Image (cartoon, rainbow, N blue to C red; front, side):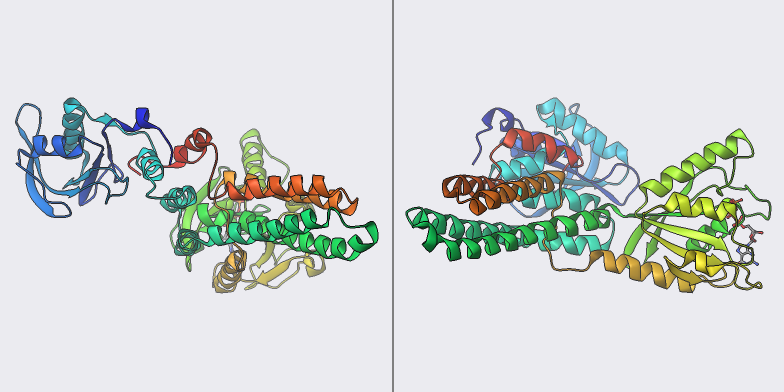
Length: 449
Ligand SMILES: Nc1nc2c(ncn2[C@@H]2O[C@H](COP(=O)(O)OP(=O)(O)OP(=O)(O)O)[C@@H](O)[C@H]2O)c(=O)[nH]1
Ligand SMILES: [Mg+2]
């Protein structure tokens, strides 16, 4: 448990639902004086824990603010482990703002982002990695992402930590007992230990790779459509969205700005970007648009390179290939309703699909969906924050050093490095510096969480 009495002695309040229109808006009040403040704004004599009270709320001048559902969660059975009162007011900002003003006038203070969750962690209601998962949950944009996070909340990370730790501890125990062995007795044991270390290293690197791959799963994948002018990029965006979002015309160089929209593809939410056609900028505005397109392609998780199949492969198409470089891309060959002239050999290195955006984009949709599904698969534990990724990288470095020590027979130094790796891995679920946590994890939270 962490001692942070000086930060936890205030009673905090914040809206727990996004501000704006909605059927209800919820404010959350947490801390030692939560019940006292709630009784004052409701003018009630008491609140039954976990009971939905219908009550009027009054401001400091005694004027009614709203009629609301008020629920009291008595410590320690609440999200934060403290007394919490939740107020469900009518949607819109007026009532909830008046309520929060009143509570602040009584002595509550506005919560900082993530402060409720921080209290939950300091009061032992939640582990740090569960809090990280909760933060990612708030930002997750698809049901697939939510499922990956649910695995986290189930404790997959804890199992990963236990497994790596116990394997390393076993190796350290071996090392300690064999320190007194003669060199010839040591040979076999050492080879077996190195094999074990290699396995641990592979487990860590597989976890890192899978996590980086899934990073986009949590925030949503970004897909950029690039191609030469008139390839049909804007037509494709519109067809994907099912609405005329981007201007389409037979004039080359129509799109100059970056147009991006969110799109649901099966269980995924993706951000799709229509870009300016790539060619030598005819004028300043167009070349700015082309710069945007280049950036979008660089940032994207996947590029859809769109080609006009009814035309010869030309220098602008060449520019498209150059821009893709080694990025992940699929080639979509458009306008197959017209006679085809493009030299397909030039696109042989890509996974490709032929279609007519004008008639039917289904072939491309199927390909996109299977690409997205492939990004997620695998059974590896997902690391969900920069902090977790950095810890696993550090552990992998320590293990690499440990391996070198072992190979050169320096058993004591091996043990030291292996202990260090255990320290990094252990910090995934039991961090030793809570001050740093505050900055890195809880600042990613939204207000009222
Ligand atoms: N025949 C045929 N024409 C198409 C198809 N898809 C798009 N077009 C036409 O191609 C022209 C260019 O389409 P856009 O969607 O504006 O092309 P773009 O790639 O966005 O072009 P820029 O914004 O200028 O870079 C329009 O006249 C479209 O109607 C298709 O599948 N078949
Ligand atoms: Mg366009």
